[in-house]
Image (cartoon, rainbow, N blue to C red; front, side, top):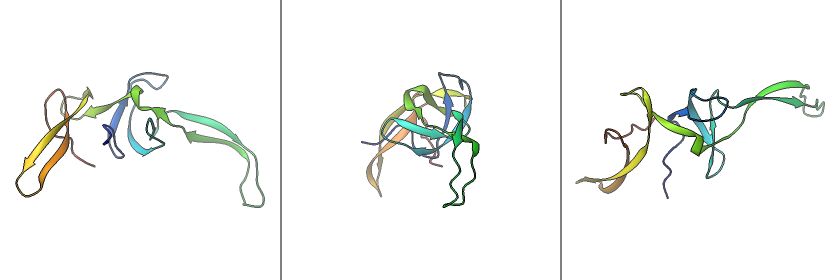
Length: 111
C-alpha cells in the first residue's frame, strides 16, 4: 500500500510542542513514524567511546514523530492539506495512482 506522506515531502506539524513548524521528511522510521528535519529535536547525553573515537557530551538529535501529527504542506494555499488518490489514465503509462491535494485536486509534485 502506498503511503500518503513520503520521503522528501514538505509537511507541517499539527500537534505537540513543535506545532506550526514546517520541515522536509528525511526518512520513515517505520509504517507510522517519520523523521522530519528540524522537528522534535531532543538533547541526548552520550557516553564517550575511545574505541570508536567518539567524545561524550550532550548531542542534539532528531527523533521520529507520528504521522498523524503532521499534514502535507500545500505551497499554493500556504496551508496544511489532506492527501487523496486519483487514478491517472495516461495512454503511454497505463493506469497509475497519483497523490493529489484534497482541497484543489492538483497533483502533488514529487521532490
